[in-house]
Amino acid sequence: MDSWPVETVAVAVVDKDGVLARTGPDKPLPWASVTKPLSALTVLAAVDDGLVSLDDPAGPPGSTVRHLLAHASGLNFGDDQVMSQPGKRRIYSNRGFEVLADFVAERAEGSFGDLMIDLVLDQLDMPNTVLDGSPASKVTGSVGDLAKLGRELLNPTIAPALTRSAAQVAFPGLAGVLPGHGRQDPNDWGLGFEIRSHKHPHWTGTDNSPQTFGHFGQTGTFLWVDPVAGLAVACLTDRNFGEWAAPLWPALSDAILAEFSQP
Figure (cartoon, rainbow, N blue to C red):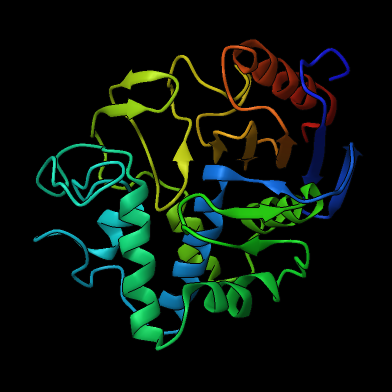
């Protein structure tokens, strides 16, 4: 990573037992859309606590909590325009996560940020992570905290059955645009997590299993969890995602898999 065209990069590799390798400063950096897996886990914890149900109506007519988590509600990226009937297309939507968070917070009679602290951040000992704005994109946190989230997703303790299920494809067969990588058919997602499947091009490694799930962010961040390899990788940088990342992120992922994959 010394050759990466960034001033700051921090990476951590974890398995279910702890940190295998780590480099870079542990200072808070913006996660951008890597916020979404954290928000999704908060929603899943709220479901597990009985505050909401995945099948509760939320969002546009015909949409549910499940649709919003899976980017299948039909909501446009950044506003309330409905682009499709629910369950017909995979339309990546920041607005969908904001609508979802408002719905859950109303049911909980509090703020979504407080709910995230109570249900996830405190449980996973993530003291350097803060939600300050949209639950789709406005978390700031350290690579150490992001690695803790990755380890949790690799071996769930918070709503474990729901979290494992959320890493499976929801609404199979939907086509759509994967941001930064063009149209994918199918464009597989779980509930808050993008699933690698057989997408090409992709931001993970060529050797990542199809079961790999996670998210990347516009601020040059990513988190992937590969249950087949038994690994999760957290990466934070201070340069926005762009052409520079297209060859470097997959190469790093493949090198990590070659070094640390479990037999």
